[in-house]
Image (cartoon, rainbow, N blue to C red; front, side, top):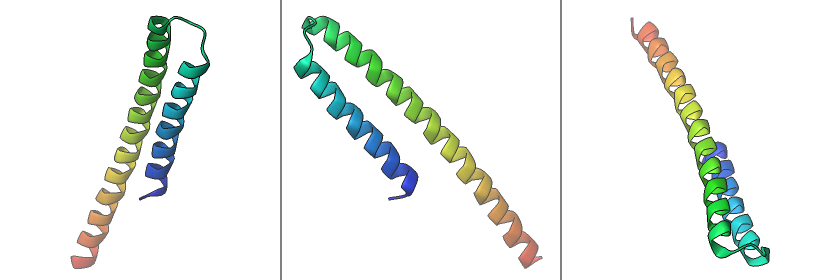
Amino acid sequence: MKKETKIIVGVLAGAALGATIALALSSDSSSEIKGKVSDWLAGILDASKEKLAGIADKASGVADKVKDKIAEINA
């Protein structure tokens, strides 16, 4: 796995563990907890999607540069 992928997996695993601990220790009603955890995880997933989109854009740019260099060498 690439470094970025490991970081994202680690963040998501930590989020899941944190949510589980929050559920276990919370004194709120279960419906309130479910709503809070759902909103929190949705925020984390949105942030992860944005980071992955940025990484994909960078990878696409690098691939284009490599193609251009190969074309220059073959010309």
